[in-house]
Image (cartoon, rainbow, N blue to C red; front, top):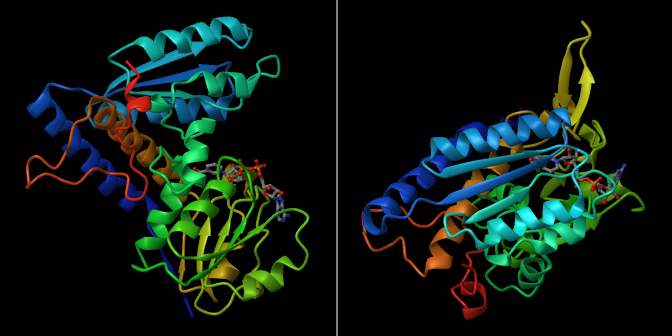
Length: 317
Ligand code: NAD
């Protein structure tokens, strides 16, 4: 078997085009331009690239995009003050603080300071709790992207056996919730899991989000399995040039899987596209608008978990 590559770049481009259509509709009907604020503390090279990409794509879909590049020495109080100002800024719909933060800053205090209605990364305990309860919420972008990629090759997820390797707050745990809501039987694996190869061999879908280069081998897979590789591991090729590889041994796995995502060009582009989709959804929900006023227009973007318009969320500016 030679697996078909799932083209995350192309699928993300489609999603961004839908976001751009929604932005045009918001501007034409309500004179609303969604605003996204991205905050970077320090000069971590990978984070700087991510922030630039997010800002560029936000501008390309028609957002008002603001970047706040703070020195690594910035104090927690100053960062919290900036977040307070962004919470109060009516032109800002989404606030993203790029992780990791320097050690002298309490990451949770910062994430919890972001108003839940503007929490487009979906990391605030309010949104985490709503997601866990099966209520509409701003869900984290990478898991939304993973579900979208699986749905691009199998329309009905119900009944599928899925192994999610990794249980971080950013990827593994929220992904397990989303897949469970979609009717999958989810096994959440982690470092301590016994017999990971055996669990994977039983799975219809394997999602690798461990941050462990080429962890998943070809002979771990059931023939015909769908493989989604979230991992990003930096290495060098035979000439010494820098390259990225995933958590899946791609060549081996391609011989067993039916569909597989490449690294790069799989999950990564979806993460940024869902940041944009979440920002449009936040802009719409915060103002109590509907994007389906014009029947020709696209549906709102987040395929699974839209914010609702409950009064507590509308307390945002
Ligand atoms: P993390 O370090 O917070 O969590 C890793 C998880 O994997 C933990 O639960 C750990 O127990 C588990 N794990 C580690 N090694 C394992 C092993 N050998 N066997 C089984 N489980 C193992 O990582 P994270 O933030 O969730 O990120 C995971 C990977 O995904 C990283 O490579 C990261 O760069 C990548 N990532 C990619 C995107 C994207 O947009 N493509 C987004 C977020 C994270």
